[in-house]
Image (cartoon, rainbow, N blue to C red; front, side, top):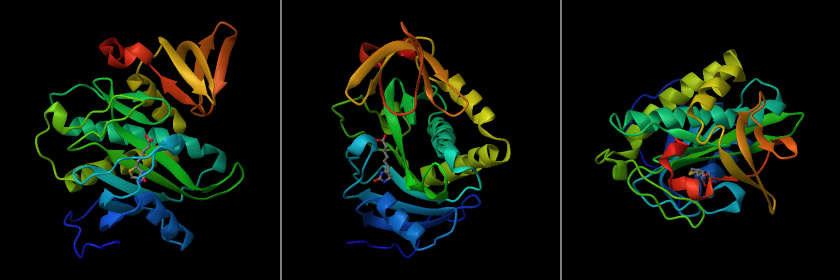
Length: 264
Ligand code: BTN
């Protein structure tokens, strides 16, 4: 059952966003996609305190207990459809800056391709881009973002961490939402007005394991190489024995290095 809160309790948020708050939904991205199909405007944000069927990349579940932040943003940017993937990098920068804002003495946030945000080598947040787009046309994108504020549900595939575990103290998810929307407003505007170059440059500054060995699972094939960064479309560049491979879809693993702080 969906319960709309009469007052989301967070007051004004950065332009162009308007927040619709729910107590509990199946997935904020499902709700946002339905709203987008019905014509809701660019900047519509669906925020829920809890999700019963949160989903992550690669058909994984996203465990969504109360205390963490779950939101999905409907975006209708006036850019070429081929540039959709770039948006995830802009979102990741906004999430990284948000996490750091609540940990003034904490570690710097690092980024793992394509859209993961790491603190102390563990995943603090995930981003899922969905929507109605193809190589030729872009009707809307829904950027679903989950940030581990109070707790970090275990994952069989990667280490997780929360802001609270890193010493943030108790934080209302709504406070994190407000900061995130401010940073998102800045990075999305930079991306649409200036282009992908500044987003790419800052992403590379924060990239975990740049120049080091990583494994990228492409389908069922693990490919090892040196992480050479991302190109001007956001594709991962992997330096292998057979030359540079340009990878547009896959899962990066750091292996043993996931706990290696030299990764940052
Ligand atoms: C990932 O696998 O790293 C992406 C996780 C994305 C989770 C968020 S939580 C809010 C939104 N609603 C969902 O069902 N998923 C995204």
